[in-house]
Length: 281
Ligand code: NAD
Image (cartoon, rainbow, N blue to C red; front, side, top):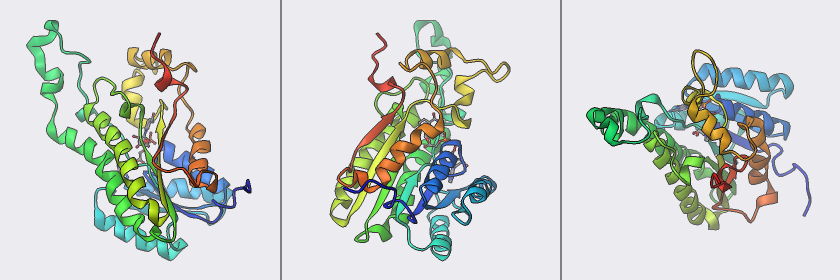
């Protein structure tokens, strides 16, 4: 086997949620490996800014493209634009996702001490908030895969989904996000099997804990910037003793996209400083 980045060079890669913290890091890593990157985000300004930054170092290698991952028509429009700029799509990274305060319980546990205010737990969750987080993470992976992966059938291609530690064991407070990420692992396996004979590989990365906009409100105090009790518990349950840096996901991403993993499909790889392996004792 030849070891090089040839199997990534000039590949057309679409990253949904590409204007976010992890998406930007993925895009930069892919540009360095010689790929063309379409940074798809519903925050067009973020996507454009991310693309402009990449183009400073690697001219004409990135574009920002508007689409909402929950709106099929906008994804179809985005695909047309990507075809015009770069040609057919080889790689899809389903990066749009996240949790929201509206789908988060205030309490970790219901107990006899707080039975007088059940609304702070599961019973008080707002269904719309719950649905929007579930849909963003689950349908927001299903729909872009329908739109962008279709042209990979037969030609070959790679789909990378973004899972989470919550997919193995749910964290307290965030039931919609946890359930949605568990469904991503299941979907990854289902799609891998369904697509195996038409040469589309489907795998997922399960990041551990990286400080980003979607989790900052849970892990750090808004006023002081110090770790919350929850943030501290995460660090003490991460054997490496720290949050990850988004760049530390790039190696796994490039491996899963390149021919180095050409017999690998249907797996979810944790990149987590040991969090998933640790029992806490
Ligand atoms: P982020 O909030 O920085 O980025 C998410 C991006 O997705 C944003 O640019 C946002 O504009 C975009 N987006 C949101 N909804 C969209 C929609 N409907 N259509 C199009 N774009 C949309 O978050 P991040 O930390 O970079 O997260 C990226 C992925 O990694 C998510 O799936 C997240 O669940 C997952 N993840 C993150 C962590 C972590 O610690 N940060 C851990 C595990 C998994």
